[in-house]
Image: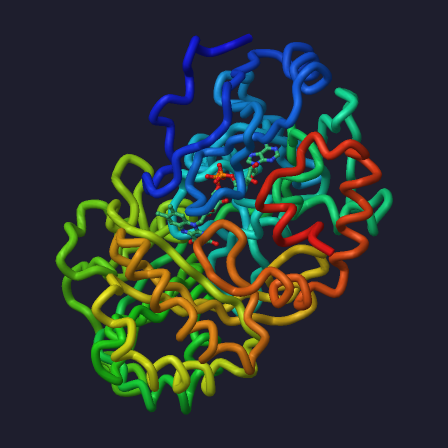
Length: 428
Ligand SMILES: Cc1cc2nc3c(=O)[nH]c(=O)nc-3n(C[C@H](O)[C@H](O)[C@H](O)COP(=O)(O)OP(=O)(O)OC[C@H]3O[C@@H](n4cnc5c(N)ncnc54)[C@H](O)[C@@H]3O)c2cc1C
C-alpha cells in the first residue's frame, strides 16, 4: 500500500539533520501485505522511529514503516519472555509489562525508540553488569529478501542468531522480537554534583559499580564531572540512605537536567523517589521531548579498562570542541556475543557527545576526538554521526566477514543494502 503520492517530501529523521532520499514509503497493515512489498520492491530499507542521526535507515529506493502493523504483546509467564512486533516503541508497552509483574533488564535514555531499531543498532543504557538492549533478545522473526519469514533463535543456530540481532537493518524486515524478562522491580535515582575529574579517573571502577546504572555528565568546560546519576534497584524493605558526599561530589537537592538550561519537566523522577523500572531507567519521559531536541549526537565505545586514560585524553583536548558541545555522557556496558554490537567481546565504556545542531562545526571537531580515542580502538555508535574511516571501523569487528556472508546468504541480490552498509560492511 502506498502512503501518499509524494510521501517523502520533507520526511527527515528525528533530529532533522537527514532528509530521507528514498522515492516512496510503504506502510503495510498485515504480514501478508508486508511480504508482498518485500517480494516486489527493491532496494528497500525499514524505518524505525527515525532516531538515528545518520543515513543508516535510508535508501535510494523504498522505505517500509511498521507503524501501522498490528501491535503484538505476547507474554509467556512460564518462559519469562515477551514477544513484541517490529514497529513498537519501548514506551508503548513498558507500563503494561510492569503491570503484568515483569521488567526488561535495561532501557536507553529515552523510551521513544522502536525495539527493532534500537536492537538493530546496539543501542544501550548503562550498567557494569548489563548488556545493551539487543542482549535481551532471544528470538527474531525476519522477513528476508524473498518475502519468506526466517526465525533466528538463541537456542537454535546460535552463530546465525549472534549475527542477526544487531543487523543494521541489512538482513530483512524484523517483524517480531522475543525479549527476556525478569520480575518487575523498583528503582531510585540519586544525583551528585561536581565530581572532580581526577576523582572520576582515580575511582572509575568503584563509581560505575556503585549502582545498577551509572551516568557521568560533563560539558568538559573544566576538569569536573558536572553530574553523577546513580540508578539503583530498591528491593522491598530497602533502607538505603545516600551519603551526602560521593568521591568529592555533593548530593543534589533539586532535580537537574543533564543540560542545565533545559526544563526538568522532561525528566523521570529523581531525588531518590522509588518508582517502576521503566520510569527510572530512561532519563526522559515518554510524553516529553527527550534530550535538547535541537542537536546531533556522537558516541564511541572502547574497552572499559581504558576509561581513566580516555577521560584524560578527551579532557586534554576539551578546548577544541567545548564550544560545539551541549553535554557529554559516560556510561558502561557489559560485553556481549552479538557480532556487530559495539560491545562485542569487550566490557565497554561509552563516551557520548550531544552537539549543537551544526554539522559543519561538528564535522571539524570529530577527527580530534577520534584521534584522541584512537589508541583505545573506538567503535562508533551505529546510529550516530562519526567521521572515522570505514576501514578503521570495519577493522574493529572480528566477525565482520561472517556478518557480510550472513547478509549475502539471506539477501543474495542486495535488496536491503544501502550506502551505509556499502561503506561500513561491504567495501573491499
Ligand atoms: C534523543 C535521543 C536519545 C538517544 N539515546 C540513546 C541512548 O541512550 N543509548 C543509545 O545507545 N542510543 C541512543 N540514541 C540513538 C538511538 O537509540 C538509535 O539511533 C536507534 O537506532 C534508534 O532506533 P529507531 O527505532 O529510531 O531506528 P531508526 O533510526 O529508524 O533505524 C535504525 C536502524 O534500524 C533499522 N530498523 C528499524 N526497524 C527495523 C525493523 N523492524 N526491521 C529491520 N530493520 C529495522 C533501520 O533500517 C536502520 O538501519 C538516542 C537517539 C536520540 C535521538
